[in-house]
Image (tube, rainbow, N blue to C red; front, side):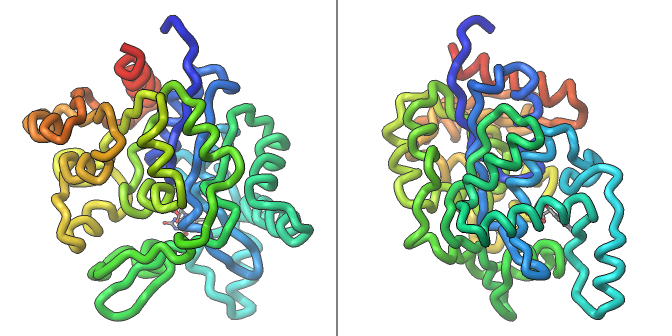
Length: 313
Ligand code: FO1
């Protein structure tokens, strides 16, 4: 790779973290900014949890539990065991070390710092040199309207195991939430923008729902490349396929391309989806085909290199 490009990535949790890990091994850290979904943020025991921000942070710090894709490796759950004894709900598995992050975040927020400032502090302390920016410092909660009730996203995903029929997705707070400092700037300054293979509705869709973000993407000079999170009609992880089906969308890479068609230049789809390339191109998006599965670290690096090569030619 010749020129060193300024790269901004839009990211959710586990799927995004794999590509970000690949990118971080080939891109100098000062050239990489990651804008992260905060629609999944939740509160337990008075603590502010920011799951996607933590997944990206722990991954870049080399701390993530690789098997689960979230939490800290070799963490213990003594605190949670004790909380269970006291009668608290413990379905959201917060490890002992992980809890330290949430305690630190909550204490800083209570002292008046913004989520983006807290994130910067955590990154500095974990010696992360890439810039991680939460999409907003304001309240934003993704809620899932099922055929029975309305749930916070983590209740839908973790507590109920994403078994419910999804009637609607509510971006609670989207009308007032402003982009965090640096979000719009990093989109406008980037030479390459990467939309990670994350849930297009509840990870990327939330970022796009923040005032000014979609507009900035449309106007940005950067080459905008997305990697499809849907391979052969299903997802590697998470409920994106179920959600898209219930909401009457086409559950395929093409269905995802349609959600990004107003700003996207290039769409990276898997080899098994090669027959969809023509339809993607009819949307005015260049379709490129490769193996998008990231099973190993080598896969992550290979896909990251592929994305950068495609974006810089
Ligand atoms: N995912 C689960 O499936 N079960 C859990 O108990 C769980 C706990 C958890 C704690 C901290 C954290 O940062 C993430 C956690 N996740 C858990 C992952 C999280 O629910 C989702 O993967 C993301 O919100 C979607 O990107």
